[in-house]
Length: 181
Image 1 (tube, helix red, strand yellow):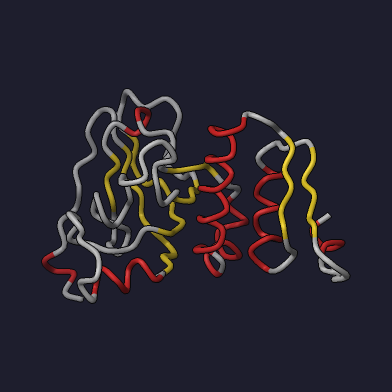
Image 2: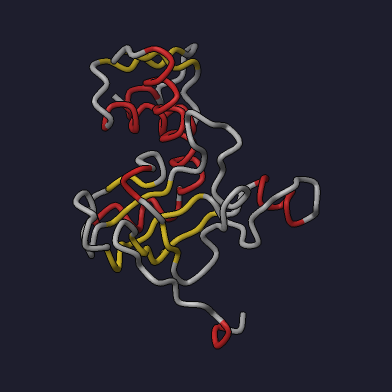
């Protein structure tokens, strides 16, 4: 990649600029690259974690240094996908315009989770998206997850950290569910 041609995004008064630190590649990225998916975006990458490096003067909910995880898909509009409808995270810096009008796009995480989430970013992004869909669809703070494989365990952790009062894992005789509890 020739970074001498990279454009540094300007931060407007209602924007933030985020420096992606870890970006996961998933099947959707591969499909777009191979032209199996149509995309308005020219830059791929929709699952990642990063650090806010600049916040506009009217932004009140984000500050320089905040560690964030990106949510891949707008939970209210399935076609609004980072890396498909908007340029993605495979760039040095990304500007999020009118950040407070798009609360679904980034979520604050503790800085010490940057490295562990970086490794698991695609399943974590999927779990965050699923938790937001569940909030919109049901409004309940109780969840039942069928299975106890790695994705179910990540989902159970995200739901508990999102304030769910109870999360139940249903699976035959596996002992992995005890780890999530």
